[in-house]
Length: 226
Image (cartoon, rainbow, N blue to C red; front, side):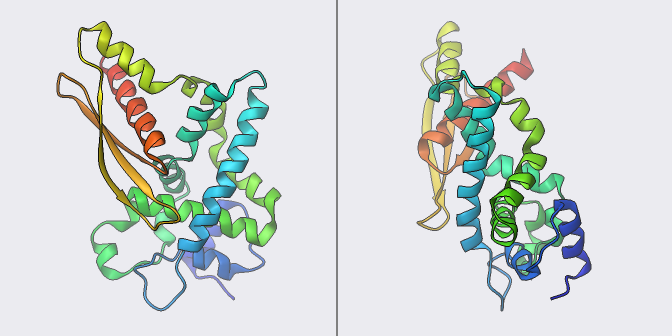
């Protein structure tokens, strides 16, 4: 199977020459694109491969870290928003096949769509070249983020609560905004709200992780305002 120009460009940026290029095509096919297998099954697998490789990398990078230190780092590195950022850096959006309405509505830049595609691509590389190939892709694409992950080791919810209480505010409220995705790979949206009216929303594969992600986002904003 010969890849088109957009797919071939994506393959080059990924740094993996596919022996089975149809896997890359499937990984970059959104469910809105009619007539071909879409990337939802690959997304399911890629999410697990990503979690394994990132967990291994975090353990190797910080041998003395506790589970409590590592868990928020892992959550921050594998959440949908981070996957979307990596996909955007690789310009995967330009190669994704999608329906016309999805394209017109800005699908090539949509966080959920890019995040799903990144996870699916990881699975495609894994199925085509094995775990070492997938590990190589992930470590290349996430390298700087993994190196900076020690700064994500705090419990963001606790830190945000301490920030609020230190200023005489009530503890932050965490509000469930919604749930999307299939049953096997749900995505939860949670908004954190401060007493002074400021809010931040984040998404993750569990409510707990989404709460942490929202707290991390709010802390980053507060630090930026300081």
